[in-house]
Image 1 (cartoon, rainbow, N blue to C red):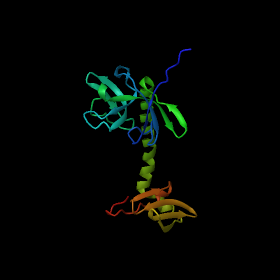
Image 2 (image 1 turned 90 degrees about the vertical axis):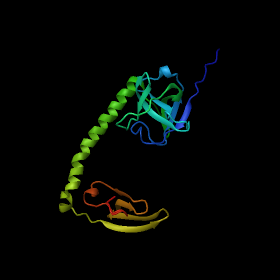
Image 3 (image 1 turned 120 degrees about the horizontal axis):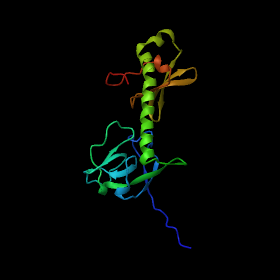
Image 4 (image 1 turned 30 degrees about the vertical axis):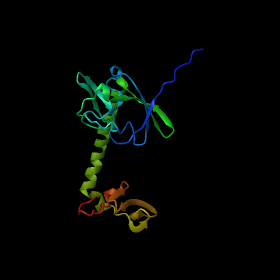
Length: 204
């Protein structure tokens, strides 16, 4: 009985935010080496940054279209296309699968990939439209005039540095880290709690 050849895949760890919605930092990507002629719009490809001699810089973006000058690519989370044109010598391979934790899932390419990007962009527009009324309500200051929750401020010293917690009862509804200038506030408490002032004199 003839042996069935085992396909060899390249494995990369994804880092970054340009493909948010499709990949997260830490996702493991299975990449298949394919001929340049088999790369189509909608495919997610791994390629070397065009025009750079540093082969260690690899980019994971989706193919928008093919031109006589090379491939035009774009990150799923970006609104603009990449400026460089990807050549055959730049291509490492096409992403066919991703692993997040123990979950494996195929990566849509071609026609399916193009529809996936349309879905992501529609989703972002809907989320932005839903956030707008909430942001206007927060900016108006109306809620703070009628709702004054009992919030206690507690300062702590941890191994990671000082931390300021804002407690409503026993629950932390906001956290401020002065050393890193990072602030988090749970909704709807952000309607009544002001962000701390940073070292530069502006709100975080």
